[in-house]
Amino acid sequence: MNSMFIACAFLLWAFHFDWPVDEHGQPVVRGVDDMWDNALIVQPKRFGVVLKPRFDKLEERLLAAMTV
Image 1 (tube, helix red, strand yellow):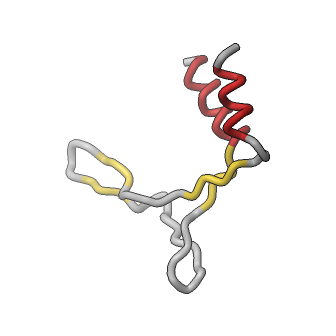
Image 2 (cartoon, rainbow, N blue to C red):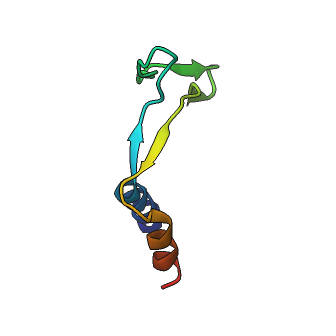
């Protein structure tokens, strides 16, 4: 469980998460109720995400952190 928390914290530290935009520049947002429900399994519908690095030279920082 700790490793999952660390991985999530690392992603939140490294990237800014944003919704994708359509051809008109409007965000394509999914709600919490946008799900497929087939009575046995409930799963979210496909959704897009845009990851933007929070820092310059992020790739170098990540590689340096992984080699420690």
